[in-house]
Image 1 (cartoon, rainbow, N blue to C red):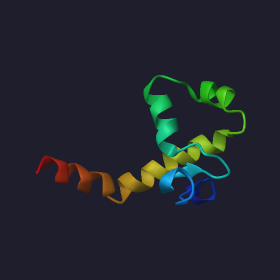
Image 2 (cartoon, rainbow, N blue to C red):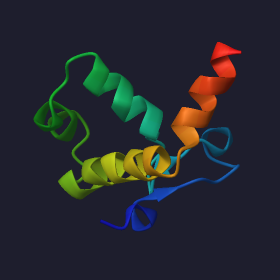
Image 3 (cartoon, rainbow, N blue to C red):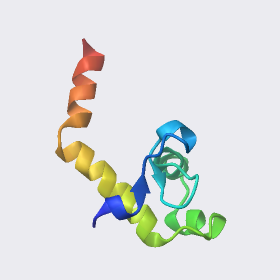
Length: 80
């Protein structure tokens, strides 16, 4: 999946945090809901303007960060 068609970063929206295109819903917000135990269905019911592909894009976005080693680099810096 090409997450770039779903996730944008605009300094005028939430200080440039990555958000779902056309919304003010951040990637961080979706991840917080999932970490709190929300299901995809509950997110989609609560925010009907979101699509299942938007949530899939969040996972694809994170996968690219992990794959590129960005998460590993951050973890190593935190351990120093």
